[in-house]
Length: 119
Picture 1 (cartoon, one colour):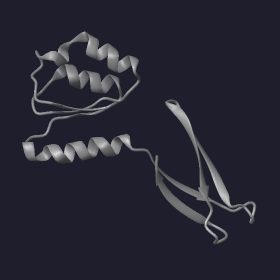
Picture 2 (cartoon, one colour):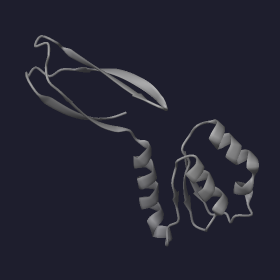
Picture 3 (cartoon, rainbow, N blue to C red):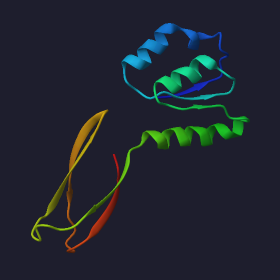
Picture 4 (cartoon, rainbow, N blue to C red):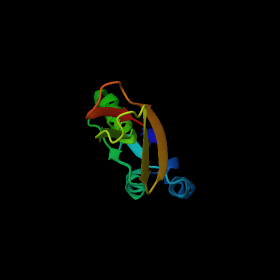
């Protein structure tokens, strides 16, 4: 989750329900704040997200892009053909947060290949 905050520490971000909701949902909170906010900074840290405090408004777009990119999974997949006649490659990814599986068509070329993919 990405939050843009212009609020100061005494505003709704200090609501204890916000913190418990974020932690209970097991999401990473990334905050871009235009003012210091210790409550949101602490919540980002607890959720393994990042708190960003841009020094100028024109840096906000870059901060949002950095936060977005940190949420996108990126993998480089390399494989050596074991079965020359295979037409698909099954990829399984497991982590503490969960798992996923996908099938990718194998290009007609043989041997070593590499793909970059976003999940």
